[in-house]
Length: 448
Image 1 (cartoon, helix red, strand yellow):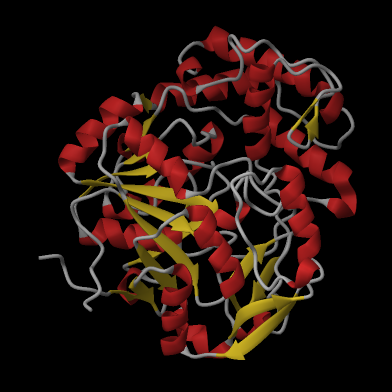
Image 2: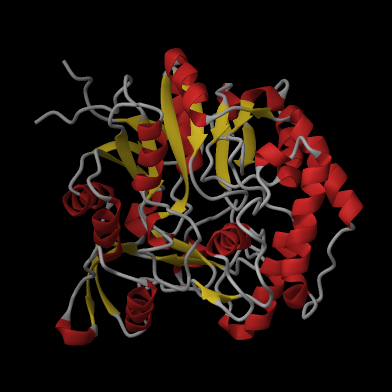
């Protein structure tokens, strides 16, 4: 049977099947450089994304601007994505240095997108500092706090109340007007009012820490200035026009195993990392069913705290990692063997995949494949997704994984690809044996 190629006429959702760092950036860059793409849509997460692209001798790390920027593809930040104005400015400056003319002309933002501020960042870092050795492995960029504060406002959370696994130390402001959004940035008075509410809410937490918050006046001016640079448009109208220029590529942040609902709590993100998040954005804009492309390396990686059953410290020296290092809040870079058990769980959580992209294939013969776990309660050898999982259930699974003993076998590139197709129940349609755009190889024949 002939493997079908990645299509050129329907939206494509690019989603990582592990804990992040599955080469999403390089994959999106490949798609944008080999077909007509009307826009790259960021549909989750925020500036914690670090998607590396190497093309024609140029390297960049995409955070909020989509990974198609070097190919000249516009970016749309849909409302589930979080906007950090300070990082946007720095990233635009980097793109300009790399030869991208007028970077902000390539960016459009949904007016309903939440805005991450220095207050969120300081609150995030203070909360992690207070956890001590029990840190969750946050990036320290305020991503979870941005989402949680909005949820707290919507829920009318009172002092002492708990939402998710965070406890409020003050009453949340009312839902109307609630959290700061992109649509507010054009109004200096609105920005100031939202920041006053935000700072008042977080003061009891921030006062316990060592991090300073910039002056209110400075934050107001910075946010308002960036707001004047942004092209703002609702998703429905923008994506309709983007679809006339070419296909839409939805670029996910992080990976399915970090999903806010079905990841291994509490070492997760406050974001839907599953394809469902992208489908919701595309469905609302009237697009046809997208092609879902799941990504994995030929081995397993993780940044910071949390379960990694296949971890093998000896692999750190064997597998070069030039663009990932230890972060103060994110924690250390960790490496493990290719975990088919975790990937099978990712498939269950993600839903049906149409194709699989495999990167870092040049190292496949240096790692093993994990085919089963031993030591789980009830003699289980794998993980099963249940739609009724809640945070307590996921936390229980996280604790169980601490006792898991992995069963490993040797592999090579060919066997790895065959095992991935069988585990993920989808064909391998793209492989990479190096980090650059030129190292990617498309597989399959176009449909008749």
